[in-house]
Amino acid sequence: MTTYNWQLIERLLHEVQNGAHQDFTPDIYAQDHAEATAAQGDTSAAVDQLATQASDYQALLLERGFIEQRPDSEGGTGRNFQLTLRGSSLLSLIDSSIPDNDHGLEVLDDQDDALDPATFDEVASKPQIV
Image (tube, rainbow, N blue to C red; front, side, top):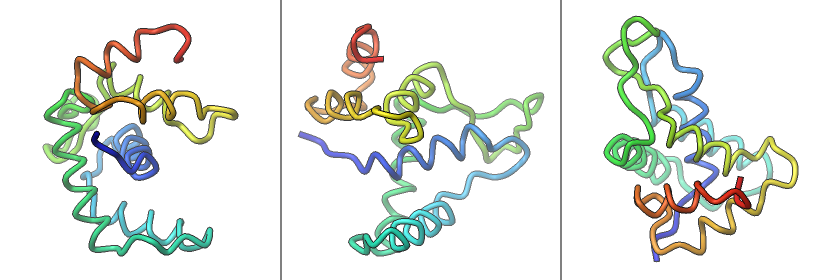
């Protein structure tokens, strides 16, 4: 069973969502994420480890169709992305700013690989999930 750092993935997806006209820099986002979690009392992840994980997640999200290159007409720099429909669905399932949004995470965590495109699409299509 594959496990994911959903907080870090959420952070990356928010950066993609808001990333018009700026390069996507997963190592900086990982550092910011480490500082934010440390401020909340969680010091479990080292910045280098999170930076590697963030880069790996960037590649995985791109490869599996959750993000795609942002077109020039929408603020693309050649080194930034935009959410796909699948990526928007993922963000809505894991978005911590939505009150009582834990059910989506629980369902994703129950999958063998929640970010497998076929698995994710099946899970996200169920009305009781969203």
